[in-house]
View 1: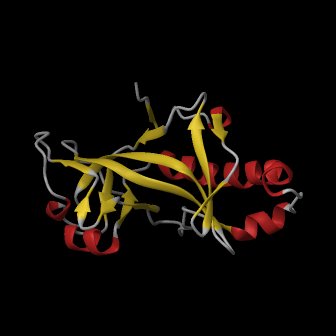
View 2: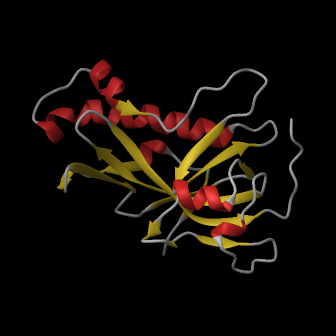
Amino acid sequence: MTQIFKHTNLKLDELTYKKPEKQGNSYYCSIFHGDNKPVYIQTPVLSSLLSGEDLRSKKQIELKVLGEDFGIYDIFLKLDDHNVHKTFSMSKEWFGKELPVNVIDDMYRRGTKPFTKGTQPSLDFKIPFTKDKCECMCFDKSKEPMEIDDIKEGTEMICIIHIKGLKFLKKEYYCDCYITQIKESEIKIQKS
């Protein structure tokens, strides 16, 4: 059975990382929770900064944190740091040589963007598509299925995010995360 963690309950020290394996032109390191369980996180209510047509063309979504609770932003900030430290500690086993932490940190493309005081942070996530078909399940407030194209800018939603692994390219690497489910929120959040 798949376990979905609320963003406040995910313990990064319980994540396990598999040795990177070659996949085409890159290497891929799967991330699991404990003993080979996929890592899914449920977000709090977030707001879409894009509409359905943009979501389809960009195959990603930018979500703005609402209210005063930046916990979802903080967990992904900590995940970025955790990924860098894990890569450093495993570099000899994974790559055959110990790499300096500053080199690893410079190569890592963070999923979190800095934000200025008085603004709300945002996060970007991929939306999976096969050919032109969206593989992310989308539901309206009544829990009825809807299309990704029906999402409007400013739509408040709760998402399920799959933290899949680390993807190593020639000059950089990043945490491969994508949205598996979107549900329009019935609750309106007080915007700050």
